[in-house]
Image 1 (tube, rainbow, N blue to C red):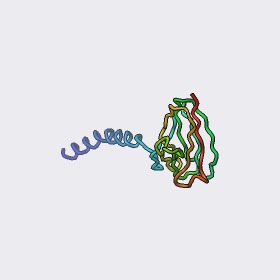
Image 2 (image 1 turned 90 degrees about the vertical axis):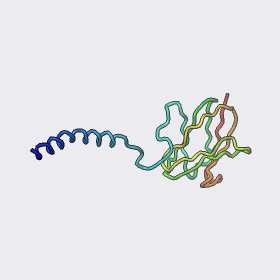
Image 3 (image 1 turned 30 degrees about the horizontal axis):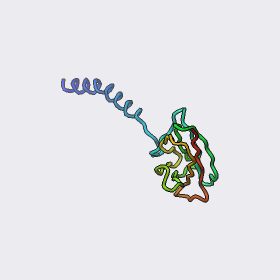
Image 4 (image 1 turned 135 degrees about the vertical axis):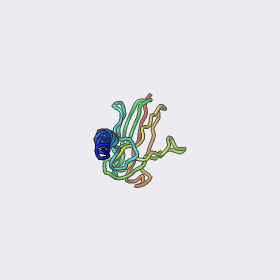
Length: 129
């Protein structure tokens, strides 16, 4: 009788355990440990960012959202080249994307990577009215 009770308990909990394992494995997460966003919204301008990217020119309308994507699998920053700083420094994780940033004020905003230096990685974002 004791054996029958244990077997019934095992059979009754098996589907529960299977469901729990399936649910937890579906939670996933990034396998590369990146902390930036992985897929931008469809109305976001994505700028490729890599060592050697110099003179990158991008123009967007005021109110646009911009993200930078590491396309060389190296970590980067997007650092304002304006004085005072026009925006907070963004981190671009290796192989990942920066956090999205919305630019509401028209102007010209130079930027560079503080990790690799302004001479080898720089650009200008122009925001039009």
